[in-house]
Length: 150
Image 1 (cartoon, helix red, strand yellow):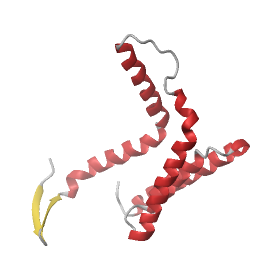
Image 2: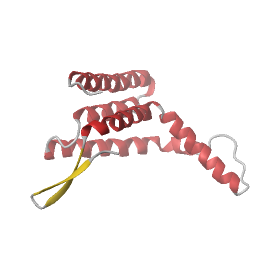
Image 3: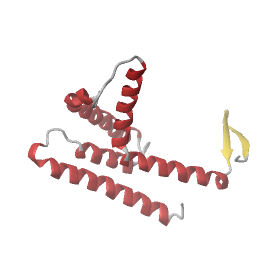
């Protein structure tokens, strides 16, 4: 358990935690977060399998992908993601650096990779988007290595 001490200042109580004990937790959190990008297929597959399992409890047998109907709404999901990214960029510009610009760039790359109107240029959008995401991850890891964080 991390050693904590209470710090009182300007009418706010804050809890300061010893950094030595939390480095392992932070590293595990970073590892799990980075793996979530890679496992997006697994998330979709797990949701479908959960729906199949839930329906089987009620005696309904489903073969295939029960959430495949959502593919016809991919444009709307992409637009919602674009609007949320636009709001995040607007907040970044309006309020200052309240979030990581690398995170904004990576999210923009993911949206570019999933661009639904690409047509025959689908591979170009996919490669460009993932190149942005990979570049952002490399820059992030390089900055962490330069600052001596693990």
